[in-house]
Each structure stands twice: as C-alpha cells, then as structure tokens.
Length: 160
Image (tube, one colour):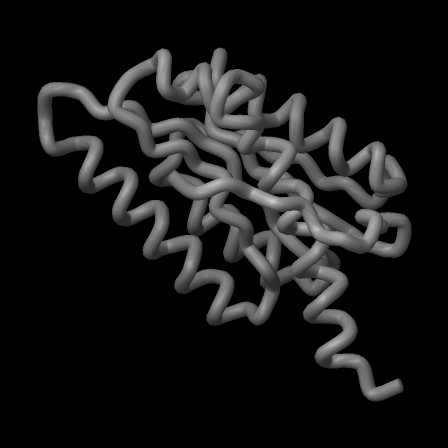
C-alpha cells in the first residue's frame, strides 16, 4: 500500500487560480472530499476570488467539464473530485476507467494540471477511510497535488 507525502516546501496557492469540479453522485463522500480540498486550498492562501467551483452529476461528466474549464485560460489547475463505488455490474469499470482516461486526455490536451481526485473503491467503508479515516484524506491530497503541480508548471513554462 502506498502513502502520500506532502511537498517539503510549504504549499503556496496565493498567486494561483484553481477550479474544483465535484461529482454529486455519492455526495456524502464527494462532499467530504470537497471539504478537505477547500480547507487545504484556503490554508495555502488561495484567494476566494481565485476559486471556481462547479458540480456535475457524476464522475463520467468530470472530463468534459475539466477540459472546458482548463481551456478557458484562467485556471492554473483543475481538481476533479468523485467517488465510484463498485457494484454488482460492470458499470464501475466503465465509469472509473473512462473518467481516468478522459481526465488524463484533457490535461495533456490543455497543458493544465487536472488532478484525479476520484475514489475508485469496492465499498462505501473504503471510501469513508479515504476522506479522513485510516487512509488519509484524498480531498486534501488532491488539493495539495494541484498546488504543487500548478506552481511546477508555472516555473517550467516561465521565461523569466
């Protein structure tokens, strides 16, 4: 089992513009992911006016929304939050796999970091473990990743 380690440098979102797209499906879980992400962004100094928050019906709708936001040119990163919990049908495989592939495609197409904060778990209790339980808080981790990657891409692409 892997573990997430936050960057050594303090997270600084004071000069960033970040969008968060959250799925309403499994909203008890996605709401907790959102709370963790927003808390981390706030603690890192993201100005309130630099945050765009959008909700979508489910994880399948995350990629097109993330691509639209990233393509506007006013976001340094897009955080996508969702929860896909395995059921008795292959629906899980289609939704989780296509959401992941779509978000990667959108990120590569736009050049904007699009963060995969989508839980793909077998059970509801596994999801609970990942929103502040024994497996950490994946919403906080997604926000930290967005801040780190947005700042990294800015440094890489800066001509100064």
